[in-house]
Length: 420
Ligand SMILES: Cc1cc2nc3c(=O)[nH]c(=O)nc-3n(C[C@H](O)[C@H](O)[C@H](O)COP(=O)(O)OP(=O)(O)OC[C@H]3O[C@@H](n4cnc5c(N)ncnc54)[C@H](O)[C@@H]3O)c2cc1C
Image 1 (tube, helix red, strand yellow):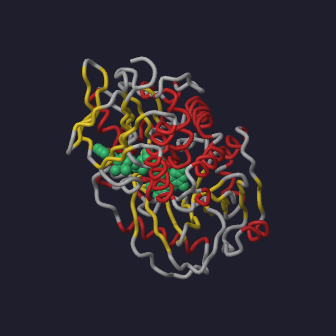
Image 2: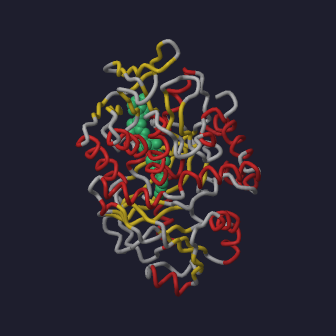
Image 3: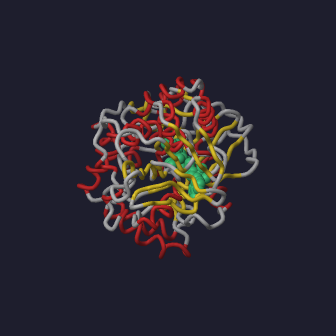
């Protein structure tokens, strides 16, 4: 194949698949998106915390990680938990995760994340304007909270990495915290304010708005569950769904945490693990926040969304098939009360669980599958898939369209994993 493919199939209508499909269609390609669910409903993009965090370039695995492993395994209330019945299955992934905390690996991952994310705020701002939904993005910063200097000291290394990559951080005392968010309780005395960060007031509506703009530009969304990728003479020829064979000259696999299952039969063994996260939406919390508030000790985001205050977080291993654990969601009430003692103890109407698609080095897989011409990967954005979606579309669209690249894709290649 030379030049642009005639027909492009994008598997996955989450924020990553839809942002890329929109960019491809709007660049003149003929694109079909296929998903088992309507756009935005099937995956993590439905209910994330809405933070657009361009400076989150420090990977999750940082030096000192090993010390935290016993708590992950044993404490049910820890922000990161591996249930007893799952730790053997999680062990190979966790071993890679620990290896990714080595200083040289951290430096590599940081450079890759910075290369992807450094323009994320501007790219999202431009994208929401382009699709006619500028009100979705709120440029009011993000506020991290610490109980005391000792707790802040534990996070210094990752803040310094962010600062070294150009993040503007303001350190706040209690009075400055209250000037931004007056309802924050007395337990938190220090803060870090990221003034040039933003949040999305409805991650689900963002995907819907992208899908609407995509359709207006002539793109097609088809509902089907893909069962396998199809090849002919060694190159991609489409994807087999439960309802139909979807023929295409180029296929982008953007199925979030489910992507590795579809890539495996083609010889790509990619260590993609779901880190399950939960949210509660409180319709009448008795609080009005302006921006996401993140208590660093509890690792949750408390975000003002359209029509609700969302408390989102917790990391639970447990794979794609286990039922959600209501007890993990319950922990979020205590997180809210710790930061906002005055919040009304109203119950959420229910809870939601989503699968963060996580790779051990925190760097998503973006780019061509070198072994299978015509196949492209766009998955594994972990905790930062909303943030990374618009940047991924800008990075990958030229490669799919056969145009000159703006940036080297090597740091994001699937082939970096041994055996991939
Ligand atoms: C609690 C929580 C909070 C988060 N907070 C933030 C945040 O504040 N900021 C941020 O940047 N990120 C955040 N994230 C991460 C972010 O939500 C994800 O990284 C992102 O949504 C991944 O998008 P995606 O499009 O790759 O995958 P998904 O949104 O999971 O979409 C994958 C799609 O593929 C479809 N699919 C799967 N298998 C098949 C198949 N066989 N056939 C057809 N379709 C299929 C699914 O139905 C789904 O629609 C959070 C995640 C969670 C869980």
